[in-house]
Length: 207
Image 1 (cartoon, one colour):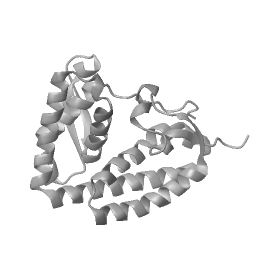
Image 2 (cartoon, one colour; image 1 turned 120 degrees about the vertical axis):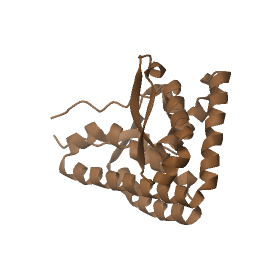
Image 3 (cartoon, one colour; image 1 turned 30 degrees about the vertical axis):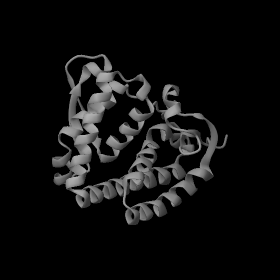
């Protein structure tokens, strides 16, 4: 049985930008296809490797990476800032052409991630030790839902917020407040007040 916490290593800005650029180049076809997840191929050099590697992305993943890149803008070179602006323009153009399709796809993703969180919380009731171990990885869904929620239109946002409130109530009842649980270098990207669920872990099992 696992006993060490799962580790969430923050992607380098170069990797986030590479994924955003790859998705932006095909964002209209991504929306039209209507499948929540898409695999893109990015240069492994973004992480110091060689060749290329596949990364699974989605609308919510792109929004999460854009949020992170915006908070790290001071560390981007002028060329990177220009590439990011170009990618955002491509994404905005695609969503502007297909607003209803885009909203529907985001809503489907939010619901899928909510379902994943509910399954995780159900498992937590069965195995509190494993729940604590896996929490840093599994809670990524909650953060991505937060970014999706910001992009949803009012009616859909309200529907998601109602479901999120139920999830959050469960999280608040089980979490022990503490330090930032992801890599400390990106703590400034996720202020405690808004991303409180990234600052603490589920209580451990009874001795």
